[in-house]
Length: 220
View 1: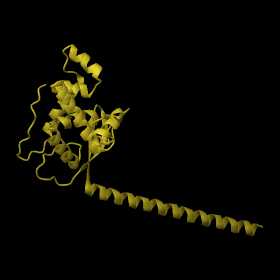
View 2 (view 1 turned 135 degrees about the vertical axis):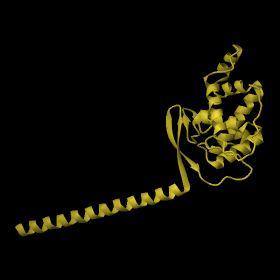
View 3 (view 1 turned 135 degrees about the horizontal axis):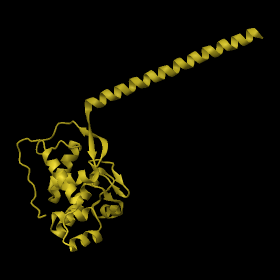
View 4 (view 1 turned 90 degrees about the vertical axis):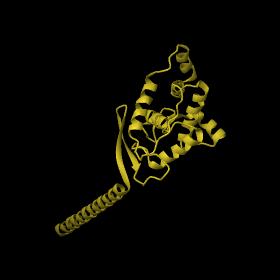
């Protein structure tokens, strides 16, 4: 009996050692894989930190070389999306730097930002999803559709109110609330102040290549 118990104990110890060696090997392998991923990531992507209204977040900024014919900004928005936004601003005759300022105010350049029923870089309300889909073929939860939807909304209000300030206030509020302010002669508020503060920030972060940036002169 004692011999059998000794053999069982020995076998148990051997199995335990084998299991520990196996688990250690898995741990080592995972560490190597993670280190390799980090190495690859650092060679392809720069990691920046954005602080908007006290919220800190990591954002990945493409380190791909810029294309000629575009103006670039040292902001938490990949060059590809900067180029895409510039093309849309030309298409819709929008002020590029103002759109970037709205984007920063709304989401801090966070592509996956969600605030209740508002989504994306431009914080588009989900109630408008069907309209944008049927009228423009845009998906507001897709980053490209989200950017264009935001530009369309802003330009629509700019055309309606013929005022940059009023368009900004309406972009951020309901028609009832915005018009109640306008009826009192109020055309500036906390939101417009934030946008213009971010506009100065965007302008200061332009990567100067000697070219002039054309800024629209819409009446405030």
